[in-house]
Amino acid sequence: MNTRDFAAQPLPPWRRAVLKVGSSLLSGDGGLDPRHAGALARFIEHAHAQQRDVVLVSSGAVAAGRHRVDAGGDGLVLRQALASLGQAALVTFWQQLLDRPVAQVLLTHDDLRNRRRYLNARATLRELLRLGALPVINENDAVAVDELKLGDNDNLAAAVASLVDADLLLIATDIGGLYSAHPRDPSARPITRVDAITPELLQAASGGAGTLGTGGMRTKLDAAAKAGAAGIATALFCGRDAEVVRALHDDRLHGTLVLAHGDRLRARKQWLRHAPSSGRLRVDAGAFAALHRQGASLLPGGVASVEGEFRRGDVVEIAMADAAAFARGLAQYGANEIRRIARRHSNEIEALLGFRYGESIVHRDDLVLLDATAHKEILP
Ligand SMILES: Nc1ncnc2c1ncn2[C@@H]1O[C@H](COP(=O)(O)OP(=O)(O)O)[C@@H](O)[C@H]1O
Ligand SMILES: N[C@@H](CCC(=O)OP(=O)(O)O)C(=O)O
Image 1 (cartoon, rainbow, N blue to C red):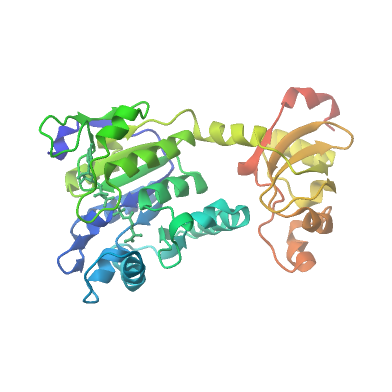
Image 2 (cartoon, protein in one colour; image 1 turned 90 degrees about the vertical axis):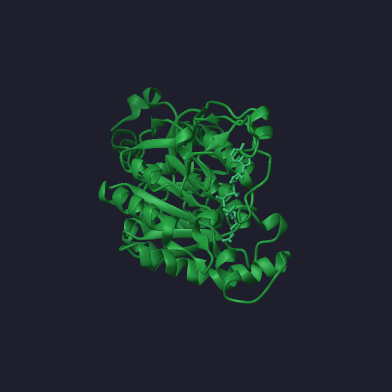
Protein backbone atom coordinates (compact mmCIF):
# COMPACT_ATOMS: atom_id res chain seq x y z
CA MET A 1 0.00 0.00 0.00
CA ASN A 2 1.26 3.43 -0.92
CA THR A 3 0.27 6.80 0.48
CA ARG A 4 0.22 8.14 -3.09
CA ASP A 5 -2.77 5.83 -3.67
CA PHE A 6 -4.70 8.75 -2.26
CA ALA A 7 -5.06 11.57 -4.79
CA ALA A 8 -4.86 15.11 -3.42
CA GLN A 9 -8.06 16.90 -2.46
CA PRO A 10 -8.64 20.23 -0.72
CA LEU A 11 -9.08 20.27 3.05
CA PRO A 12 -12.28 21.98 4.18
CA PRO A 13 -11.67 25.56 5.39
CA TRP A 14 -10.44 25.54 9.00
CA ARG A 15 -9.22 27.87 11.72
CA ARG A 16 -8.80 25.50 14.62
CA ALA A 17 -7.79 21.85 14.28
CA VAL A 18 -7.13 18.97 16.60
CA LEU A 19 -4.18 16.89 15.36
CA LYS A 20 -4.02 13.32 16.66
CA VAL A 21 -0.70 11.50 16.34
CA GLY A 22 -0.64 7.74 16.91
CA SER A 23 2.02 5.72 18.75
CA SER A 24 3.06 4.03 15.52
CA LEU A 25 4.46 7.35 14.27
CA LEU A 26 6.42 8.24 17.37
CA SER A 27 8.22 5.15 18.52
CA GLY A 28 11.44 3.77 17.16
CA ASP A 29 13.98 1.26 18.40
CA GLY A 30 15.39 3.57 21.04
CA GLY A 31 12.14 5.03 22.41
CA LEU A 32 10.54 8.17 21.00
CA ASP A 33 11.80 8.87 17.51
CA PRO A 34 11.59 12.33 15.92
CA ARG A 35 11.82 11.00 12.35
CA HIS A 36 8.13 11.54 11.55
CA ALA A 37 7.21 13.91 14.36
CA GLY A 38 9.54 16.59 12.96
CA ALA A 39 7.40 17.09 9.84
CA LEU A 40 4.24 17.20 11.97
CA ALA A 41 5.83 19.80 14.25
CA ARG A 42 6.64 21.94 11.19
CA PHE A 43 3.02 21.63 10.07
CA ILE A 44 1.90 22.88 13.51
CA GLU A 45 4.28 25.84 13.27
CA HIS A 46 3.12 26.66 9.76
CA ALA A 47 -0.49 26.62 10.97
CA HIS A 48 0.43 28.99 13.81
CA ALA A 49 2.11 31.34 11.35
CA GLN A 50 -1.22 31.47 9.50
CA GLN A 51 -3.02 32.46 12.72
CA ARG A 52 -4.59 29.04 13.03
CA ASP A 53 -4.86 27.12 16.30
CA VAL A 54 -3.73 23.53 16.71
CA VAL A 55 -4.40 21.28 19.68
CA LEU A 56 -2.29 18.13 19.72
CA VAL A 57 -3.56 14.78 20.98
CA SER A 58 -0.48 12.62 21.21
CA SER A 59 -0.24 8.91 21.96
CA GLY A 60 3.12 7.35 22.71
CA ALA A 61 3.39 7.40 26.51
CA VAL A 62 3.20 3.61 26.82
CA ALA A 63 5.69 3.13 23.99
CA ALA A 64 8.05 5.69 25.59
CA GLY A 65 7.69 4.06 29.02
CA ARG A 66 8.52 0.64 27.66
CA HIS A 67 11.99 1.81 26.75
CA ARG A 68 12.73 3.03 30.24
CA VAL A 69 12.24 -0.23 32.08
CA ASP A 70 12.72 -3.86 31.35
CA ALA A 71 9.13 -5.10 31.33
CA GLY A 72 7.42 -7.53 29.01
CA GLY A 73 3.69 -8.24 28.83
CA ASP A 74 0.67 -6.09 28.19
CA GLY A 75 -1.60 -6.15 31.27
CA LEU A 76 -3.70 -3.09 32.04
CA VAL A 77 -1.87 -2.10 35.21
CA LEU A 78 1.47 -2.53 33.45
CA ARG A 79 0.29 -0.27 30.60
CA GLN A 80 -0.83 2.31 33.16
CA ALA A 81 2.57 2.21 34.83
CA LEU A 82 4.35 2.43 31.47
CA ALA A 83 2.21 5.42 30.46
CA SER A 84 3.20 7.14 33.71
CA LEU A 85 6.86 6.37 33.04
CA GLY A 86 6.66 7.69 29.49
CA GLN A 87 4.34 10.69 29.69
CA ALA A 88 6.90 13.28 30.80
CA ALA A 89 9.31 12.10 28.08
CA LEU A 90 6.50 12.41 25.53
CA VAL A 91 5.80 16.04 26.39
CA THR A 92 9.51 16.87 26.51
CA PHE A 93 9.88 15.20 23.11
CA TRP A 94 7.29 17.55 21.57
CA GLN A 95 8.79 20.54 23.34
CA GLN A 96 12.15 19.81 21.75
CA LEU A 97 10.56 19.91 18.30
CA LEU A 98 8.60 23.13 18.81
CA ASP A 99 9.41 26.74 19.59
CA ARG A 100 6.25 27.66 21.40
CA PRO A 101 5.63 26.39 24.93
CA VAL A 102 3.84 23.07 25.13
CA ALA A 103 1.36 22.36 27.92
CA GLN A 104 0.43 18.89 29.12
CA VAL A 105 -3.28 18.16 29.61
CA LEU A 106 -4.36 14.69 30.74
CA LEU A 107 -8.05 13.84 30.45
CA THR A 108 -10.37 10.93 31.08
CA HIS A 109 -13.81 10.18 29.75
CA ASP A 110 -15.17 11.00 33.18
CA ASP A 111 -13.74 14.52 32.97
CA LEU A 112 -15.63 15.13 29.75
CA ARG A 113 -18.88 13.61 31.00
CA ASN A 114 -18.92 15.72 34.15
CA ARG A 115 -20.38 19.11 33.28
CA ARG A 116 -18.23 21.16 35.59
CA ARG A 117 -14.97 19.44 34.71
CA TYR A 118 -15.88 19.65 31.02
CA LEU A 119 -16.26 23.41 31.31
CA ASN A 120 -13.09 23.73 33.35
CA ALA A 121 -11.10 21.75 30.78
CA ARG A 122 -12.57 23.89 28.02
CA ALA A 123 -11.70 27.12 29.80
CA THR A 124 -8.13 25.92 30.43
CA LEU A 125 -7.63 24.91 26.81
CA ARG A 126 -9.03 28.20 25.53
CA GLU A 127 -6.72 30.06 27.86
CA LEU A 128 -3.70 28.02 26.73
CA LEU A 129 -4.48 28.87 23.11
CA ARG A 130 -4.90 32.53 24.01
CA LEU A 131 -1.47 32.42 25.67
CA GLY A 132 0.03 31.01 22.48
CA ALA A 133 0.82 27.59 23.97
CA LEU A 134 0.41 24.24 22.28
CA PRO A 135 -1.78 21.92 24.40
CA VAL A 136 -0.50 18.33 24.21
CA ILE A 137 -3.30 16.05 25.34
CA ASN A 138 -3.27 12.40 26.28
CA GLU A 139 -5.57 10.13 28.20
CA ASN A 140 -4.85 10.11 31.92
CA ASP A 141 -3.95 6.44 31.75
CA ALA A 142 -2.83 6.14 35.38
CA VAL A 143 -6.39 6.64 36.65
CA ALA A 144 -8.53 5.68 33.67
CA VAL A 145 -9.92 2.18 33.69
CA ASP A 146 -13.12 0.75 32.23
CA GLU A 147 -15.92 3.24 32.37
CA LEU A 148 -13.57 6.16 33.05
CA LYS A 149 -11.60 5.44 29.94
CA LEU A 150 -12.16 6.73 26.46
CA GLY A 151 -10.18 3.69 25.42
CA ASP A 152 -8.21 5.12 22.57
CA ASN A 153 -6.85 8.45 21.57
CA ASP A 154 -8.82 8.59 18.32
CA ASN A 155 -12.01 8.94 20.36
CA LEU A 156 -10.28 11.25 22.83
CA ALA A 157 -9.29 13.48 19.89
CA ALA A 158 -12.89 13.58 18.62
CA ALA A 159 -14.10 14.58 22.09
CA VAL A 160 -11.40 17.25 22.32
CA ALA A 161 -12.35 18.58 18.88
CA SER A 162 -15.88 19.26 20.18
CA LEU A 163 -14.51 20.55 23.47
CA VAL A 164 -12.35 23.24 21.84
CA ASP A 165 -14.82 24.03 19.03
CA ALA A 166 -12.39 22.86 16.37
CA ASP A 167 -13.54 22.80 12.79
CA LEU A 168 -11.24 19.98 11.68
CA LEU A 169 -9.93 16.74 13.16
CA LEU A 170 -6.63 15.58 11.62
CA ILE A 171 -5.61 11.98 12.36
CA ALA A 172 -2.02 11.12 11.47
CA THR A 173 -1.38 7.39 11.31
CA ASP A 174 0.96 4.86 9.71
CA ILE A 175 -1.14 4.14 6.63
CA GLY A 176 -2.27 6.31 3.69
CA GLY A 177 -5.90 6.41 4.78
CA LEU A 178 -8.95 4.20 4.79
CA TYR A 179 -9.01 1.20 2.46
CA SER A 180 -12.05 -0.77 1.38
CA ALA A 181 -10.64 -3.82 3.22
CA HIS A 182 -7.74 -4.53 5.57
CA PRO A 183 -4.63 -3.38 3.68
CA ARG A 184 -3.15 -6.86 3.75
CA ASP A 185 -6.06 -7.92 1.50
CA PRO A 186 -4.90 -7.50 -2.15
CA SER A 187 -8.38 -6.34 -3.20
CA ALA A 188 -8.21 -3.33 -0.82
CA ARG A 189 -8.79 0.01 -2.59
CA PRO A 190 -8.23 3.52 -1.22
CA ILE A 191 -11.30 5.47 -0.16
CA THR A 192 -10.61 9.20 -0.46
CA ARG A 193 -13.96 10.55 0.66
CA VAL A 194 -16.60 9.28 3.06
CA ASP A 195 -20.01 10.96 3.05
CA ALA A 196 -21.62 8.62 5.55
CA ILE A 197 -20.12 5.96 7.79
CA THR A 198 -21.99 2.81 6.80
CA PRO A 199 -21.92 -0.64 8.46
CA GLU A 200 -19.95 -1.88 5.40
CA LEU A 201 -17.23 0.71 6.01
CA LEU A 202 -17.06 -0.14 9.69
CA GLN A 203 -16.71 -3.77 8.73
CA ALA A 204 -13.91 -2.95 6.28
CA ALA A 205 -12.08 -1.09 9.06
CA SER A 206 -12.44 -3.79 11.70
CA GLY A 207 -9.36 -5.79 10.79
CA GLY A 208 -7.24 -4.77 13.79
CA ALA A 209 -4.46 -2.35 14.51
CA GLY A 210 -0.78 -2.32 13.68
CA THR A 211 1.70 -3.66 16.26
CA LEU A 212 1.91 -0.45 18.29
CA GLY A 213 -1.53 1.10 17.75
CA THR A 214 -4.59 0.53 19.87
CA GLY A 215 -7.69 0.66 17.78
CA GLY A 216 -6.78 0.37 14.10
CA MET A 217 -8.97 2.03 11.50
CA ARG A 218 -12.17 1.12 13.31
CA THR A 219 -11.60 3.54 16.18
CA LYS A 220 -10.62 6.23 13.65
CA LEU A 221 -13.96 5.81 11.91
CA ASP A 222 -15.79 5.81 15.25
CA ALA A 223 -13.98 9.03 16.09
CA ALA A 224 -14.80 10.53 12.69
CA ALA A 225 -18.47 9.64 13.24
CA LYS A 226 -18.47 11.42 16.60
CA ALA A 227 -16.72 14.46 15.17
CA GLY A 228 -19.07 14.45 12.17
CA ALA A 229 -22.14 14.47 14.41
CA ALA A 230 -20.72 17.61 16.04
CA GLY A 231 -20.25 19.19 12.60
CA ILE A 232 -16.48 18.55 12.43
CA ALA A 233 -14.83 16.94 9.37
CA THR A 234 -12.04 14.38 9.85
CA ALA A 235 -8.95 13.90 7.67
CA LEU A 236 -6.99 10.63 7.92
CA PHE A 237 -3.50 10.64 6.45
CA CYS A 238 -0.10 9.01 6.66
CA GLY A 239 2.20 10.84 9.06
CA ARG A 240 5.18 8.79 7.86
CA ASP A 241 5.23 10.45 4.47
CA ALA A 242 6.85 13.89 4.74
CA GLU A 243 5.38 14.91 1.36
CA VAL A 244 1.87 14.11 2.55
CA VAL A 245 2.42 16.21 5.68
CA ARG A 246 4.00 19.00 3.62
CA ALA A 247 0.92 19.08 1.33
CA LEU A 248 -1.21 19.90 4.39
CA HIS A 249 0.63 23.26 4.61
CA ASP A 250 -1.20 24.15 1.40
CA ASP A 251 -4.48 22.62 2.62
CA ARG A 252 -4.07 19.63 0.31
CA LEU A 253 -4.94 16.24 1.72
CA HIS A 254 -3.58 12.92 0.44
CA GLY A 255 -5.74 10.63 2.51
CA THR A 256 -9.36 10.07 3.47
CA LEU A 257 -11.73 12.93 4.19
CA VAL A 258 -14.76 12.04 6.31
CA LEU A 259 -17.35 14.76 5.85
CA ALA A 260 -19.31 16.29 8.72
CA HIS A 261 -23.07 16.31 9.01
CA GLY A 262 -23.94 19.95 8.81
CA ASP A 263 -22.14 22.90 10.20
CA ARG A 264 -20.26 22.76 13.53
CA LEU A 265 -21.83 25.82 15.04
CA ARG A 266 -25.27 24.84 13.83
CA ALA A 267 -24.96 21.41 15.44
CA ARG A 268 -23.98 22.99 18.74
CA LYS A 269 -26.63 25.70 18.59
CA GLN A 270 -29.24 23.13 17.64
CA TRP A 271 -28.38 21.21 20.79
CA LEU A 272 -28.59 24.36 22.93
CA ARG A 273 -31.97 25.21 21.45
CA HIS A 274 -33.50 21.93 22.58
CA ALA A 275 -31.57 20.80 25.65
CA PRO A 276 -33.68 20.89 28.83
CA SER A 277 -33.14 24.07 30.81
CA SER A 278 -32.74 24.24 34.57
CA GLY A 279 -33.49 27.90 35.26
CA ARG A 280 -33.96 31.37 33.87
CA LEU A 281 -31.96 34.58 33.89
CA ARG A 282 -33.95 37.82 33.70
CA VAL A 283 -31.85 40.47 32.00
CA ASP A 284 -32.19 44.21 31.45
CA ALA A 285 -32.74 45.99 28.15
CA GLY A 286 -29.06 46.83 27.77
CA ALA A 287 -28.08 43.15 27.96
CA PHE A 288 -30.88 42.23 25.57
CA ALA A 289 -29.58 44.72 23.01
CA ALA A 290 -25.94 43.63 23.47
CA LEU A 291 -26.79 39.98 22.95
CA HIS A 292 -28.90 40.72 19.90
CA ARG A 293 -27.06 43.49 18.15
CA GLN A 294 -23.43 42.71 18.90
CA GLY A 295 -23.49 38.98 19.53
CA ALA A 296 -21.93 39.77 22.92
CA SER A 297 -21.56 37.50 25.95
CA LEU A 298 -23.94 38.02 28.86
CA LEU A 299 -22.10 39.84 31.66
CA PRO A 300 -23.21 39.95 35.32
CA GLY A 301 -24.10 43.65 35.08
CA GLY A 302 -27.01 42.90 32.75
CA VAL A 303 -28.58 40.20 34.92
CA ALA A 304 -31.54 41.52 36.92
CA SER A 305 -32.66 38.31 38.65
CA VAL A 306 -32.27 34.55 38.67
CA GLU A 307 -35.07 31.97 38.70
CA GLY A 308 -34.63 28.32 39.65
CA GLU A 309 -31.71 26.32 40.94
CA PHE A 310 -28.96 25.30 38.54
CA ARG A 311 -25.27 24.61 38.51
CA ARG A 312 -22.37 25.83 36.43
CA GLY A 313 -22.66 24.18 33.01
CA ASP A 314 -26.45 23.84 33.02
CA VAL A 315 -28.57 25.19 30.20
CA VAL A 316 -30.58 28.28 31.18
CA GLU A 317 -33.16 30.44 29.45
CA ILE A 318 -32.55 34.15 29.08
CA ALA A 319 -35.51 36.52 29.15
CA MET A 320 -36.50 40.12 29.80
CA ALA A 321 -38.83 40.82 32.74
CA ASP A 322 -42.21 39.10 32.25
CA ALA A 323 -41.40 38.13 28.66
CA ALA A 324 -40.78 34.75 27.08
CA ALA A 325 -37.18 33.57 26.68
CA PHE A 326 -35.32 35.17 23.77
CA ALA A 327 -32.11 33.17 24.19
CA ARG A 328 -30.67 30.06 25.83
CA GLY A 329 -27.15 29.26 26.88
CA LEU A 330 -24.77 27.47 29.22
CA ALA A 331 -24.38 29.14 32.60
CA GLN A 332 -20.76 29.73 33.57
CA TYR A 333 -21.80 30.14 37.23
CA GLY A 334 -24.41 28.39 39.40
CA ALA A 335 -27.72 30.08 40.29
CA ASN A 336 -26.66 31.11 43.78
CA GLU A 337 -23.37 32.49 42.55
CA ILE A 338 -25.15 34.57 39.91
CA ARG A 339 -27.53 35.92 42.58
CA ARG A 340 -24.46 37.29 44.35
CA ILE A 341 -22.86 38.90 41.30
CA ALA A 342 -25.98 40.06 39.41
CA ARG A 343 -25.93 43.80 38.54
CA ARG A 344 -22.24 44.02 39.44
CA HIS A 345 -19.24 44.63 37.21
CA SER A 346 -17.27 41.60 35.95
CA ASN A 347 -14.14 42.82 37.69
CA GLU A 348 -15.90 42.47 41.06
CA ILE A 349 -16.60 38.73 40.58
CA GLU A 350 -13.51 37.52 42.37
CA ALA A 351 -14.01 39.83 45.34
CA LEU A 352 -17.67 38.80 45.66
CA LEU A 353 -17.27 35.04 45.20
CA GLY A 354 -13.68 34.43 46.16
CA PHE A 355 -13.03 32.85 42.74
CA ARG A 356 -13.74 33.54 39.12
CA TYR A 357 -14.35 31.30 36.09
CA GLY A 358 -14.35 34.16 33.61
CA GLU A 359 -16.04 37.49 33.06
CA SER A 360 -19.24 36.24 31.44
CA ILE A 361 -22.32 34.59 32.90
CA VAL A 362 -23.04 33.03 29.50
CA HIS A 363 -20.23 33.07 26.92
CA ARG A 364 -21.33 34.03 23.41
CA ASP A 365 -20.02 30.70 22.01
CA ASP A 366 -22.48 28.97 24.34
CA LEU A 367 -25.46 31.14 23.51
CA VAL A 368 -28.27 30.80 21.00
CA LEU A 369 -30.83 33.48 20.16
CA LEU A 370 -34.30 32.08 19.75
CA ASP A 371 -36.23 34.48 17.55
CA ALA A 372 -34.82 37.92 16.99
CA THR A 373 -37.87 39.34 15.21
CA ALA A 374 -40.36 38.59 18.01
CA HIS A 375 -38.57 40.98 20.35
CA LYS A 376 -38.06 44.03 18.18
CA GLU A 377 -40.78 45.98 19.96
CA ILE A 378 -39.04 45.80 23.33
CA LEU A 379 -35.65 47.04 22.14
CA PRO A 380 -34.72 50.20 24.05
N1 LIG B 1 -9.68 -0.79 6.13
C1 LIG B 1 -8.49 -0.39 6.64
N2 LIG B 1 -7.83 0.64 6.02
C2 LIG B 1 -6.65 1.07 6.52
N3 LIG B 1 -6.04 0.55 7.62
C3 LIG B 1 -6.63 -0.47 8.28
C4 LIG B 1 -7.90 -0.97 7.81
N4 LIG B 1 -8.26 -1.97 8.65
C5 LIG B 1 -7.30 -2.08 9.61
N5 LIG B 1 -6.29 -1.18 9.39
C6 LIG B 1 -5.09 -1.06 10.25
O1 LIG B 1 -5.14 0.12 11.05
C7 LIG B 1 -3.80 0.54 11.29
C8 LIG B 1 -3.77 1.97 11.87
O2 LIG B 1 -4.27 1.97 13.19
P1 LIG B 1 -3.34 1.92 14.51
O3 LIG B 1 -2.32 0.82 14.35
O4 LIG B 1 -4.25 1.87 15.68
O5 LIG B 1 -2.54 3.28 14.38
P2 LIG B 1 -2.30 4.52 15.36
O6 LIG B 1 -1.19 4.14 16.28
O7 LIG B 1 -1.90 5.58 14.37
O8 LIG B 1 -3.59 4.84 16.07
C9 LIG B 1 -3.17 0.37 9.95
O9 LIG B 1 -1.77 0.31 10.00
C10 LIG B 1 -3.78 -0.93 9.44
O10 LIG B 1 -2.98 -2.05 9.80
N1 LIG C 1 -2.62 6.79 25.99
C1 LIG C 1 -1.86 5.82 25.25
C2 LIG C 1 -2.29 5.76 23.80
C3 LIG C 1 -3.48 4.92 23.49
C4 LIG C 1 -3.80 4.94 21.98
O1 LIG C 1 -4.93 5.19 21.59
O2 LIG C 1 -2.77 4.72 21.11
P1 LIG C 1 -2.83 4.89 19.49
O3 LIG C 1 -3.80 3.87 18.90
O4 LIG C 1 -1.45 4.70 19.04
O5 LIG C 1 -3.32 6.29 19.23
C5 LIG C 1 -0.36 6.21 25.19
O6 LIG C 1 -0.04 7.40 25.27
O7 LIG C 1 0.45 5.32 25.01
